[in-house]
Structures are given as C-alpha cells and as structure tokens.
Amino acid sequence: MLRALFNQWCKVNLMLQIIIGIVLGLIVGIALPDVGNSVAFLGDFFVKALKSVAPVLVFILVLSAIAQHRSEHPTNIRDILVLYLIGTFAAALCAVSACFILKPTLLLTNIEAYDASNAPGGVVLVLKNLLMNLADNPFSAIANANYIGILAWASIVGFALKSASEHTKVFLSELSDAVSFMVKIVIRLAPFGVFGLVAQTLANTSFGEFVSTYAVLLFALVGAMLFVALVLNPLIVFVKIRKNPYPLVLTCLSQSGLTAFFTRSSAANIPVNMDLCKKLNLNPDTYSVSIPLGATINMAGAAITITVMALAAANTLGMQVGFLEALLLSIVASLCACGA
Image (cartoon, rainbow, N blue to C red; front, side, top):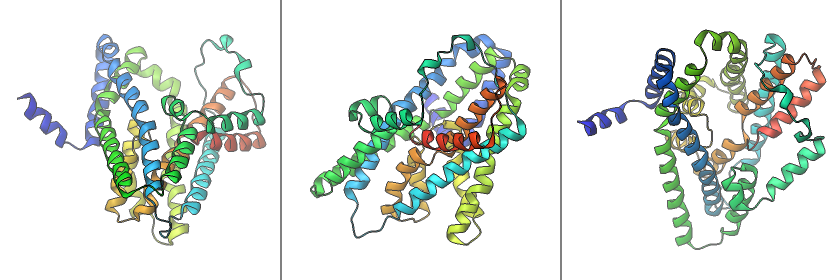
C-alpha cells in the first residue's frame, strides 16, 4: 500500500509536488502553528542536504569536464564568461532600479548588537579575501562551500589530468554521473523541505503581519527576478542568435528555472540543466564546462538579493544612497555573487 502510494507520488511532476508542499505548509502554519514548528526540521534537513552535496557536485563536474575536454573541440567559454558577468551586473542594476522606485525596508532586530568592526575596511580588503579564498585548501573549500576555491582547485586538477589514461577519464565520467544522481535524489526531497520551511515561517509570523512587513520587499525581489528572466535574458539571447528568444527562454524557465527558484540552489540544479542541454542537442564540450561554471558565476538571483537587501537596510536606517554609490554597489554585488 505505502509502496504503491510512493510510486504514484514519484510519478507526479516535481513542480506540482512543490506547489502541493507550499499549499500544505500554508495550511499547517496558519491553522496548526505547533505542528508547523514541529515539521521545521524537514526544511532544515533539505537545506543542509543541498549545501552538503552541491560543493562536491561542482568540484567533480568541473574537474571531469576539463580533464575529458579535447583541445580541438571549441567550447566558446570566453564568450560565455563575458555574458555571465554582463548578465549578473545587469541584474544588479535592475535591482537598484527596483529599490529606487519601491524603496523597500526591513524589520531589523538587535541592531544595537551589530559589530561594525567585522565589516571589510575597503575594496582592497575584499579583493584580498577573494584571493585568500582562491588559495584555500581544497578539502576546506569543499567543506565550507567556498565555490571560488572549489572552481580554482577543480580547474587545476582537471588540467593536470588531461593527459591521464582513458580508464581514469572513464572513472571520472562515471563518478560525475554518480554524484549527479545523488543530487537528483536530494532535489526530489524539495516538496518536503519547502513544506517545512513554509509551515515554520507561518507558524512564527501571522500571514497578515508577514505580508504587511515584507510585501514591498518581496515585490522588489521577485519583480527584479522576473524582469531579468522575461526581459533581460531574452534580450541577451536575441542579440546572440538574432531569433525570437522566447521559445528557448520559456523552455528553460519551465524545465529548469522554476526548480532552481524553489530549491534555492543553482548548484544543486546542475543535473537538471545538463539533462536539458542534452534534450536541446547542445555541444557537450561546451555545456559540460559552462553549466557548472554558470551555477557559481552567473548568479543574477544572488546579485539581486544582495543589492535589494543592502538598499532595504539602508532605507530602514534612513541612509541616503546616491546613483554613484548604487552603481558601485552593483559592481560589488556582481563580484560577491560569484561563488555565493
């Protein structure tokens, strides 16, 4: 009975499962707050599982892709990296515009306890920290989800293994498939994780208070993300292919974007993107490298979140932010989003 029910559940589309999880989380969080707090561990478990497996996935996939790449096959990686950085910076600018128009604020607590001495003293210190992350111990980088260090070590080891035997490369390919399978299992837990997160949030905050406090902030965040997904990204695609971009963009959103949004992890969404690239008959020499890099460098969502939350905090404290400061914030957010 239970096994048959489980098999039927697995046949349901993942996005529908997540929507069911959200609806049930809303009902439980509002009607049964004690139960909502009790199931909070489901959300914590899901987030911890994602954070645990994603760094290993990125390391193995990048390492394997670089080791197996043949120099005579073009990857177009330079153009892709440029587009990644342009897209991330443009997303930060969109977030700045949304904040200037909507002026979102935050509900800050214990602001007196904030220790400003922990903040970086300037851009030089930020760049120094970035370089230190590049030189981090590989095992420490994976354990602490330091994606800048993970990418650096994966690239170095991958280039070192380019001359390895075919048996070694087959092993790396099979290892990357195994890790991708593990991530797919974790992603299947998303409905239960979302259920726990939503139930806990609504159990500790009334729905009306939640909406009144964060409505403008959520509108700024989600609005900027939708603008990037439906206007900015299609514009970039049109410039490159000179064709109607929306069939491709909508396919990517329906099969990949929504999953990434609800699982809250671009890195964990890598297997979904790899499968989509295969369905679209793209060049494996390109996407086997560009997809793992994109999951850690092309971070439009992270850039939007960093920018909106920073400006919302400034608005809350009554700080006036000028255009040049906002432009600098966009640049810093784009750099900070890489590997976030």
